[in-house]
Structures are given as structure tokens and as C-alpha cells.
Image (cartoon, helix red, strand yellow):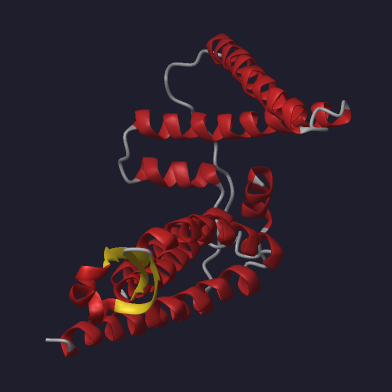
Amino acid sequence: MHHEIDSLAYTNRLRYLPPEHKILFGMTLFCLSWAAPSLIQLLITVWITIWIIIYAQIPASVYLKLLAIPLGFWLTSVPALVLAGVGLSDMQLVQSDIFWGVTLGNLFIYISQQGLQQITVLFTRSLVLTACMYFILLTVPFVEIVRILKNIGCPSLITELLTLMYRFIFLLTETASELLTAQQARIGYCNWKTGIRSIGIVVSQMLRRTLENYRQISLGLTSRGFTGELKVWYIRRYKPDFRYIIEAIFGCTLLFVNIGWHYVSRI
């Protein structure tokens, strides 16, 4: 999946647009989404999805798989937020918060109305914020993100660490994929006991191979005169598209006005 994300960042239909514009647009929507009510968050999700699937031509199957990752974490938090329990003698204290409940012995288990509201807010917010971040990741190559961070004054130590971490993500996924393929070819997961043993071998081998790859990269950088900063030559030219600029400015302005009106009307 990491290789696919990196490949799409270089081949999407918005590749020719300046990366500064795309990052500014994505971060603006991210900030607006954080303050927006749930309905507007859903509208922003639809809008950014149009940019990703239609404008950038990112495959819908890939995008939906990526969106399913945070939704999985959301599902694990639903029971903790929705379910609650009190003693039968204390039911009157939570009567207004009960959506549905059942009695189990001396305990009353119920679905909280406040919890339902919380998971709704959590769902829309996590969905829209994740979509905004995916817009940046799927349309802007990582090396350009690092370059922009350097241009705005981000310390070199942080940008170099980001570059190395990004590189090692690919090393880890590639190593894990090779080990899993080799074990599956040898029927390493034919039963529960063998599967657990195979997973232990994968973890230990990943650590050994990752450390070996790190040593090779360190030796390679040292032999090439590495002085603590990774320099990349950028020669690609970008062309702003005023059609996209106008849509982005108009849409963000409209969202800002609607969000502001939402909070003003509550005063």
C-alpha cells in the first residue's frame, strides 16, 4: 500500500499543479473541518473526495481502502462511548440519557443518547480530517513535502529524520512482504501453533534485516560524503491552473462564512 500511495503521488492528474497550492488547500480544509459542525464536515468530505477521485483520478478502490483504516479505529471506540451501566436504584439519575436499555440482574445496561451524539461527531470529524490528509499524501510526493518544510524554516534535523523514517517504512514493508511470502510458500500458517511460531520468526527476522539495511545505508551515505543533510535536486516545473484556484478560493470562502454564521447564530 505504501508503494501504491507513493506511485499515485507521482502519477495523479493534479501532479502538474504547484505542491504549495495543494498543501495550502489541504491544510485550509483541515483547519476549517476541525471547527465545522457535523453537516458541513460531511459536505467537505464529499468535496475533497471529488478532488481526489475525479480531479486527481485516484482509483476509488484505493481511496476507500485508505478511508477504512481510521473507520476501523472508530468502530473499536464505539462500545466505550455508547454503552453505559448503572445499578437499578440509580436509574432515575440517567433516565433522560437512556436511548435503549436492558436489565441484567441488579445492573441496567443502556445505550447513551449523549454517547450516540459523541460517536456521530467523532465519525464525521475523523472522516473529514483523514480525507484532507489523504488529499495531500495522494497528490504531493513526499520529497516535495520535505522541500516545502525546509523552505518555510523547518529545522534540518526534523526533515532529515522524516526522510529516513519514510525510507525505512518501505524497507519494513518490503522485508515483511518477502518473509510472509516465503513462509506461506512453506505452509507456515497451516494451523494456529505454526502460525504463531511463524509470526515470531517474522518479527525477529525483520529486526535483524532492518538493522542490516540501516548499516548498509549508513555506510553508503558515509562513502558519498554525507555531512548531515540530504540534498535533492528539483528540476520539475509546475503550472498553476486558475480553474482549480478559483474553485478552491470560492469553496473555502463559502465554508468559512457558513462556519462563522453557525457559531454567530448560537450566541
